[in-house]
Length: 377
Image (cartoon, rainbow, N blue to C red; front, side):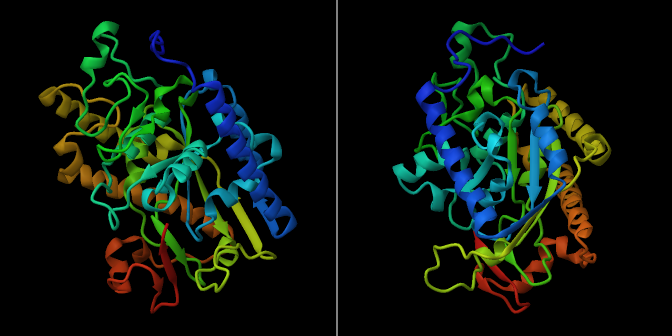
């Protein structure tokens, strides 16, 4: 049975907030859809099955699990551009649209941008190359994990009058611990906590595991970072997982483009291929079983850990690291399967290893010796 809703917690954000979010999500979706249909030659493959999945999730109360979509990352406009392919009726339903992870130093640099991207269901994410608050265990990843689960995260054995004093977390300013519906990414800032509301239970989270834009003529991918493995291993129950392959936005926003760089280039082919929903238990069941056993063992030693909160052993132990590596490689192979369905040959298996990409040298962004372009995004 789902936990009962405490009287002090609203089921959803305020009416003005919901209306503003619906407007932002819908307006951006309309702009992207208009660009794809009127100024580009766009095509979608496998979208019928994906829309069926979204239809099954339209009733928030009836959702039984979250949804993770994962794709390659080829331009600064991948998100939101690719979601413009969805039919109009889906664009004004924010409770059934994706939550994304956006770079803190690009999308949240002032109050105006912060408000816009927060209303657009983007989570403020620190990049390790630009902030000491970045990395695998930052509070935003905890929020993403909780969005995929069935909230709120209230311990049933704690009386309501003691609730705010009972849920202290070492990693996150929890909305239930401090009596407000917000969280901090660095101990100073303050953002609305999306996982605090019933209307966001079992949400949809999209992630670009490459962590940066990669444009290369043969459309190979960089290695995947481990954040996606936390979403898969720690969310309960296991979310539905749909791999996606995108082509074309790298021409719409080619990193070699000249003035005016801020304008997307029209009249290019854009293709979005939705893979089949993965058999999650077959793909990740063994890894999740090992993870749950590890977590149970650690909780016997140190006490119950809140959803998305880890102790040092669960963060840094050799077994935890190996589980994340293997999980991430399996996700990458799933995206490669969709790439293969588009007629591309198998890539060099070494392409999935972080060590392989050291050949790019210390310069993170710009043209590389192998003909590719990279950019933080």
